[in-house]
Amino acid sequence: MHRLLALPVLLSLFAATCGDPAPAAEPTTEQAARLPNVPYALAAPSAAFDLPRELREISDLTVLADGSLGTVQDEAGILFSLDPATAAIRSRTTFKERGDFEGVEQVGDDVWALESNGTLFLIHRGQTEVEAERIDTGLAGRNDTEGLAYDAAGNRLLIACKENPGAGLGDVRSVYAFDLATRTLSAAPVFTLDRRLVDAERPFKPSAIAIRPATGEFYVLSSVRKAIAVVAPDGTLRTVVDLPEALYAQPEGLTFLPDGTLFISNEGPDGPATLLRFDPTDR
Image (cartoon, rainbow, N blue to C red; front, side, top):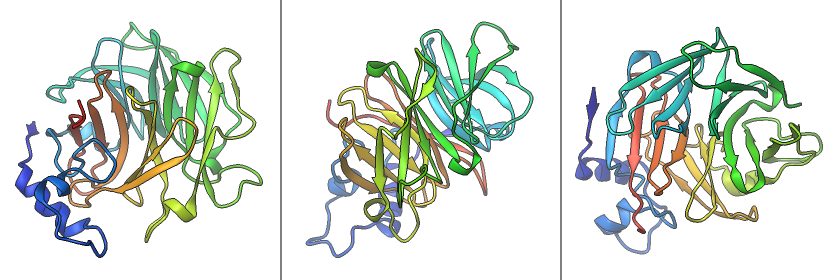
């Protein structure tokens, strides 16, 4: 089942839950729909879909080789393929009986999945059941790894840590690189987020990361402080945008189509999980 949410309703929800503090003037409808410095109307999705019960604990998203959306969920090692136009489940690939899977990413013909304890699984597509290759990254449960992205330019996977950033790093959130050629983790993060800049009333805890194709920017999603941090390719923080509570129950995954279309998934703690689609406003 899917639903298309009305723009006026979403704008009113956004105004009630996510208004800018002490604005200089009452924002127009257009300004409210297009949040600062992000070319997506994050309070007004182009489409919104309710997901089946088995995806209630949906985690990350990726774009699979056939153009469908790939996703995993917290409890079982199953790679789901979703129709990007309807959110219907196209296929299921079992690669591990159980596990706390938080990240997924297509690389070439294969798919990588990430557990919260830092373990990666390499999934070779083409069968309904596969034996995934298990790879230890050196990260651990204390890091609570939840975000996974493919950086083609560096032939590496980016892994975002929700908790412990690593020894001696202080009060930051960290993103490491896993080199696909050598299968080794970078000794230091490729970039960090200073918590003095990204925390608000609630902490910024990364739940997903993706690279916007047109700009190379890193979009880092947070599920506690419901927000997106946009980071320049050189690691400089550009902006942090809050997400309206009424639309984002628990944001856990995001990915971009090659044309810049953005998808965000939400777990369903008190109802069905959702998949939101956003068309870029700058094309």
